Image 1 (cartoon, helix red, strand yellow):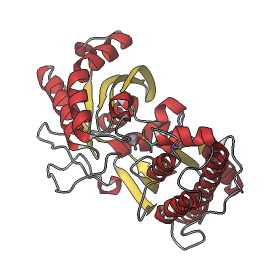
Image 2: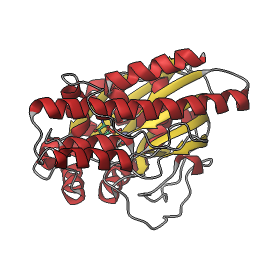
Image 3: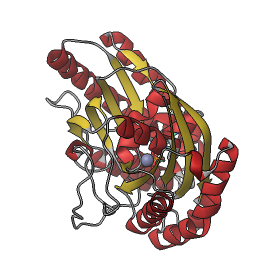
Length: 362
Ligand code: KG4
Ligand code: ZN
């Protein structure tokens, strides 16, 4: 049986809609439209929540129409609607969630409230046959976590960051170096021209028990180095700092992932697959080093293609299909959740709306 799901993503600064169809459990992306708001936020050097929410309102209807058009289908051919319900910026979340609910209500379709992190966590299964359970390194602008993924809604967290996320560290370091916005891709480009051993930056938590991360000290060390160079490093120095920073991040990610692989093997008795997902997984240097680490430990390695690493709605539709197939349908009463840890996912989403603000990236 084929299942066709519309996915909607508005948790941060991309307005996105996609149609995914699964036949016999094999998904196919029929369309995947992503409208980036980068230009709206560039002047501010980061995502401005109010601007993001307004831009989502303006764009969402046309983006959904474009996704359906590119897939060559109408609303009547959908089996369900999936929208990101959290975590993320509340204004944007409400826009996507309400739009998704309205489409589901009008066309009498099942509705799926998707955790954005679950979208990233399952995104690899859109393009590769990775079986459960697998070990996941989720590295994005708002998160840095190692998780055992047993299926949709079934996660065990092995470790998380105790301060900054890896993507956040990339963004802040790029800003310090005057590399522009968004920071991650700019820093990767600058690092290509630099020496990774030029500066010896700290590798927080390396070799410690557990699988937690910490990047605040690394960011501070970069800030001190930049200050020591009079506040404005030359292009050469900035490239060296970028390469040295990226090398430190790589060492941290590898050390913690290795510890998680050992725990995964002890718990499950299998080697399985090590999956890296989230925006930072777009970094080619990190991908290559993490792949080598997995190979060392006897794990298979999988990473979504670049355009599915950064925020998109295909991953939301994909997670929606998995939840729909598992009968995890949500009520139209479900509220947006600015904070929503992945290992709290139960069968279907809760209706509670816990308090708490949320950073710009999730
Ligand atoms: O998953 P994503 O698109 O949004 C969140 O849910 O956070 O991830 C965005 C993050 C940003 O911090 C961005 O700088 C980082 O991913 N990123 C990268 C690269 N491309 C995106 N970081 C390092 N290298 C890259 N090539
Ligand atoms: Zn994301």
